[in-house]
Amino acid sequence: MGRLCHGDHTVRLILLSPPGAGKGTLATGLKARTGIGHVSSGDVLRAEIARDTELGRRVAAYTSCGDLVPDDILFELLTPLALAAAETNGGYVLDGFPRTMAQAIRGAELGVALDLVGDAAIYLSAPDDVLVRRLLGRAALEGRPDDTITVIAHRLRVFHDQTAPVVDYYRARGILLEVDADRTPAEVLADIVERLTARGIREPQLP
Ligand code: AMP
Image (cartoon, rainbow, N blue to C red; front, side, top):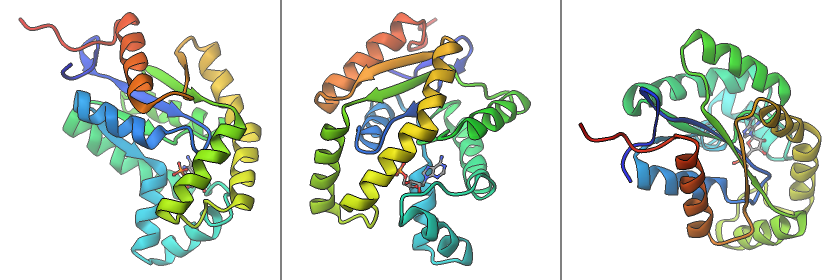
């Protein structure tokens, strides 16, 4: 499969998922298979922390305990990357954004202003016990500071309280694609590509 298109533009996807459902792996898979840009809010924030800037230290105070970073910081860091991805690839998969209704609404307003409205929102769903098991497995391999049992429990609570309404919002707008994430990454990716294709989001036809 080549580039994913929707109408005349490369597709813009939103990836919603609780921690541990595999959104990073899926976004990387989508990028490898379709060439679509990958913009991860978590990666952007971790990069700022790694630079050890004053802003990065403020970000770390939130991420280290599993709290959401304030919107102004998030938009400041994320918007230029989304614009660059749109310019380079035509479209992108936004991984980990929006996480709250306020972000969804501000993001939608920005999308209209910049002519970058999202085409589909993919929701990776899996039971909490599966997510916890996966995150603890990742902790053993990667040692991410927010993959401790206490912070994982808090991040799941934040997801259910703040991000679940965003899932409902996209469902009501008719652009939600809910996917069972309790399968192998290859199965999840194949399912998503098939369902995007069924919605008219497909590789461009050759002339
Ligand atoms: P992730 O890599 O997507 O699991 O994100 C790791 C952490 O970065 C989250 O637990 C939050 O602290 C922060 N974060 C990522 N995306 C957002 C967002 N859209 N809004 C606020 N904080 C975020």
